[in-house]
Amino acid sequence: MKTIVLGIGNPILQDDGVGIHVIDALRPHITNPMVTVDSAYTGGMNLLDMIRGYEKVILIDAIKQEGSRPGAVKRFLLSDAPTVHSCNPHDVSLSEALRLAKQIGEKHLPSEIVVIGIVVKNTFDFGERLSKEVASAVPNAVTMVLDELKNT
Image (cartoon, rainbow, N blue to C red; front, side):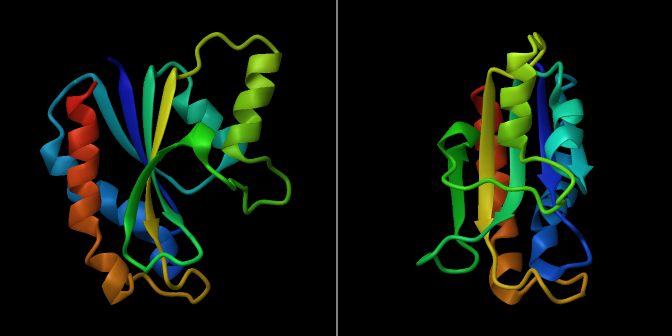
């Protein structure tokens, strides 16, 4: 199954870059030529362009979840996400971009989009280091992605 694994985030906003850190740790483990591993510093319509043509997408991203401890790693389907937004006021969320693409008849959209979300602590301060709690979650997220790839 043609799959793309995308780490999403901003690597200079501390924990917001966790998806990029997971991708960096994941790269040496991926040998399947049907799996593309990449990073994305964007959202919405640009992400739609990146995932077009793949059957399965695994997104790795920072999430904020009330009542969850920083560093917790969660797996869910994009379609089940309670809130997905774009940080860019001139763009739409990936969920909205997918909905629009389907409405105009786009045929090359993934049939499954899985999100591996890492609950974050600090996404507002400049810095390239993850908080201790979030950094300790990177190996767990790598394992979850590798397990997800076994099912493709």
